Length: 81
Image 1 (spheres, rainbow, N blue to C red):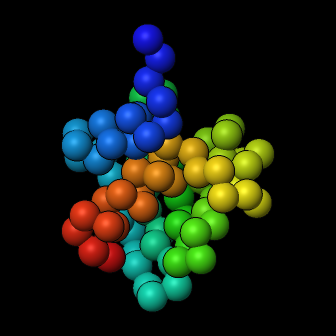
Image 2: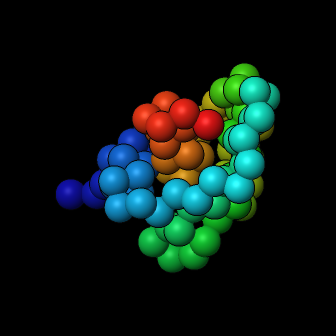
Image 3: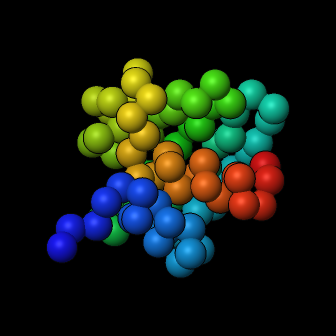
């Protein structure tokens, strides 16, 4: 069975693959060690995001978060910015 984006995001958080670079009230800059590469993520307080992964480069203008951006969002919700 294939892992969903939400399951992958939770796994990345649980495995400690999220690295914060900077957080403000407006956005969080983070890095995620994914399964195949390291990705830079900007997660905005508005819910939008940018990620350097292939999915993120295509879908960043939507609210359809990639697993890396969702992982940063989950990590921020868990521990705060």
